[in-house]
Amino acid sequence: MTMMPHSLDSATYDQLALDLTQRHWLRAQTLRSLRWMAIGGQLITIIVTHFVLGYNVPLIPCILAILCSVWFNIVTAMTMPPNARLSEPIALLWLIYDMLQLALLLALTGGLSNPFSLLFIAPATVAAAALTGSSARFVVGFAILLILILEVIHLPLSHPERGILELPETYRLGVGCALLTGVGFIAIYVRRVADEAFGMSQALSATQLALAREQRLSALGTMAAAAAHELGTPLATIALTAREVERSLPKGTDEAEDLALIREQTARCRDILAQMSRLRKQDMEHIRTAPLLSILEEAAGPHEHTGKRIEYFVDGEIVDDNNIPSPEVERRPEIIHALRNLIQNAVDFADSVVWIEIIDQIERLTVRIQDDGPGFSNDVLNRLGDPFLTTRRGKRAREGGYEGMGLGLFIAKTLLERRGATITFSNQRNTDTNLPGALIEISWTPESLELADEPLNLEATVSRLGNFGW
Image (cartoon, rainbow, N blue to C red):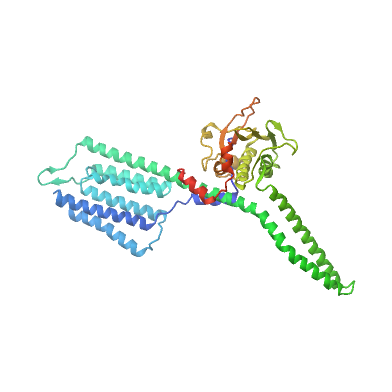
């Protein structure tokens, strides 16, 4: 079994899975605008061909076909709101109508000999970019069928002086083959690009959610400290007032005992808040920087009771206590979250043990996370870090757990790279022992560590990822 990315949590990814089943529905205004452009082009072409070039074009049938599109646009504009979005079946019907209208005009004006037969590519491209796979395949298949019909059934163009415009049969067959190839190739190409862009947008949204949640959790300590500070004064006032009232009452009465209980519980609340404040003060001492070993232990904390052993090494020396020093680095929520994702992967696919090693060199700081499982499979090794790449579905289905969607590794890789890290994946440990299992190596150079110290902005991160072609 291949070690692959894990999910943030089932609820988040279930929502993302639901979103992935729904493509962005087309706006009615978009298709209407494209149809108006087509109407204008068709009308100009018919007029120029008949009155300027002198070819005998069946004007009345052609004008009627164009008026059908005009009527279609006017009726839909009057009956649908400007911002209406088309459902999948309606969008499919609109594209089928456009192809039928185009095929009718081409059949009246020379068939595939008409150079405007190239426009069959337009509805196929729109379907590939905006509709689901089955609908897009239907549109492409329907366009190919119409092209084949036009090869056989069409009215040739004729000129009073030059006679019938008839291309050589071989050339006409070549045009048909070119159209078939163009429609299929461009549709497949656009579909792949649209799927990757759509999947990347979903993955970036998941990255944003993960980092935002991690930052909110990190802020809870600050909120607790603020609560301790703000509640201290009113609790002291309550305790003082209760003591003064208790002194004015005879001892042994029920009212005096109730006031004593109030003072005791108030004192207990103050002790709890004081303890929270002390813990927060201790946290603040290392909130900005912390030993890398402590950060790794914090990231691995949720996975230490899964039945798998986690062993730590610093420069080749096994960690058996907390006295082994490790480099001080920025303690960032996004780094902790990314490391937690990677450690989760190792724990999930390890047979019994996960090794986490810190290697501190002058020119490079490296963290290695390795498990004793089967490692990465060769067919996905070069694709690790792509969104929605996972082989967990089979494994999780057999174990009855949550399957995941293959975003964990993408999120971890994205967050760490935005912090200046370089991540590599392999199946061998570069030591004399040559231990089995998958190996993830994260490294920082001194220059990249300076980048890691900069504040991370969520929107800027997503924007920069988009600028990189993602």
